[in-house]
Image 1 (cartoon, rainbow, N blue to C red):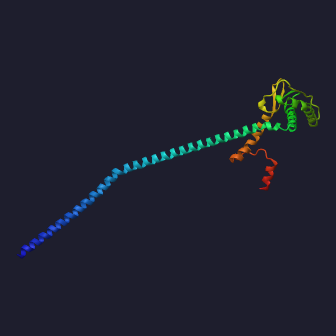
Image 2: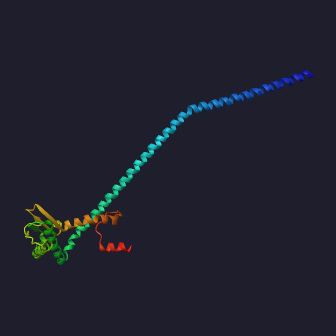
Image 3: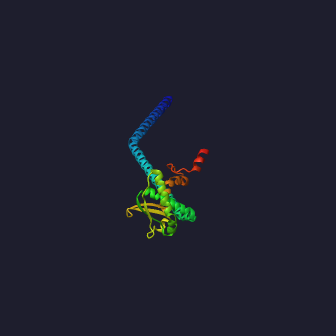
Length: 241
């Protein structure tokens, strides 16, 4: 009886041992299979992951480039719109200044003096012996009243400057007139109208605009411009600062 118990006990121990060995072997096989699975999975997935990363990087760079292009386009568009608006505002300033030219003629005495000085300046700048002066039709009577004085003063200026008389032959055209759009002032012609010195109010406004527009742009839009004409009050304010 004792032998049967011992035999059963040994059999039980052997079975447990075999089962333990089997479990350990199964665990070992499972671990090895998992390891091989992970290796194989990595071998398969890593190239695909690399491709995905490369594709993502490419698309991201394409998106960055597209955004930069779009931003640059919007900036250029905004800049053009600003420049266009500035141009419109500057044109408004020019038109407003042109409309105010006629106010220079409201004071007859001052305008008469201006007209004479414009004639004298025209004679000096055109530097021709035979010249014809033209004005707008409404200024003819005023021009006649100061024409001889203008010629006389020009001759005095010329003689005091060069030490010799200028044999200028100047005449005031009483049949052909300047267009009303020039508002006032004079034009001096020579050599059968082949040479013209435009000293009309409209032309003088153009000269002023060309000189002052950079400064005006700076005051209106904060644009740093080349230094143009500096008036005495501006120079004084600059020193005070």
